[in-house]
Image (spheres, rainbow, N blue to C red):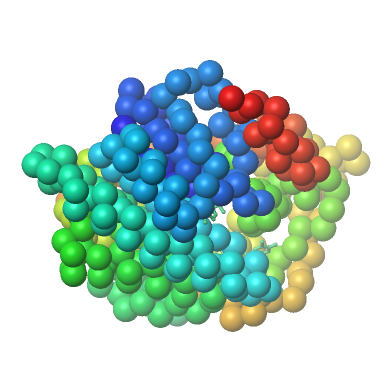
Length: 352
Ligand code: NAD
Ligand code: DAU
């Protein structure tokens, strides 16, 4: 079996759902259930015995040690983090606590567990740490995309805390020989994305008739990857990656934010036209820019493509259509997130 931490969040939940379609191997999913953790995203696994959910903190060394001893996983995939840049600007402490201190405790607990393993169990064990392209900093318009050799230049408290966790993970390989893998991925989008992030926020606000906030001039560039392609990349790195290596994951889909917003608006115009027949783009509202806003991210994904044979299945055109359609088909999920009702899911559905 494998451990997934942060598996009730956006990417973690998609990963767990896809894992159990692709594999018969059980998952112990450890998630603190912060505001970003939503067990309703995993509702389809309610009676699936291969999914064991534990509410817990990656920084809780005694809990993690107990779980490792009890279940003996062959791998841990660490998604658990505070992930929203804007929140890190308003309150950086939680980011240091989970992303830096929490990852440190997780590493210590895993090191102690791994030290006791023997033979093939020890040789085959993996810790895969899920990280971000934001650790590399910001690119100018004509700079080449980030390769794995790019210097770390994080600019927000979020990206600095992720960069710190990446360095700790790297050091545990170099110093103790812990078999780690790190992935640095670009912006994900897709189902179960919390509507504080750009794409789900635009969809949800558009449908609610609210303004669509675009920071600054809207010309900041992000490199978008459909979340299920990120999940397939993680599976590939887990099965074939070389320990101690990092792998950039991206979709070769650089787009300015304003173009993203227009694309979402025109899909909604087609799929769910406004009652007054006006375009959703009329709701666009330029607002004050994010502090220290990174101008451009771009991922050079040739290493994972050439060495591990991974390729994304979706283009931006196909992925964004699926995403908009998912939000139209799953409005109750959004309603429950907005009302906070998703927080009751644990009590009502996982009493045992
Ligand atoms: P998310 O905020 O949606 O989910 C994070 C999950 O971690 C939540 O379920 C939360 O409850 C849980 N969590 C937080 N603190 C915890 C703790 N101390 N112990 C246990 N669980 C805890 O984030 P996401 O967008 O799914 O991102 C997952 C990972 O992928 C993060 O490490 C993030 O840095 C990285 N990443 C995200 C993106 C993206 O575009 N979203 C891109 C690249 C990398
Ligand atoms: O690059 C990977 C990163 O992508 C991940 O590491 C982060 O966890 C993830 O949150 C995401 O970070 P961003 O800051 O790029 O994502 P966000 O959706 O918050 O913003 C995307 C862009 O849109 C960014 O340039 C800011 C802008 N934006 C965002 C919001 C929420 C707006 O213009 N308006 C908004 O309301």
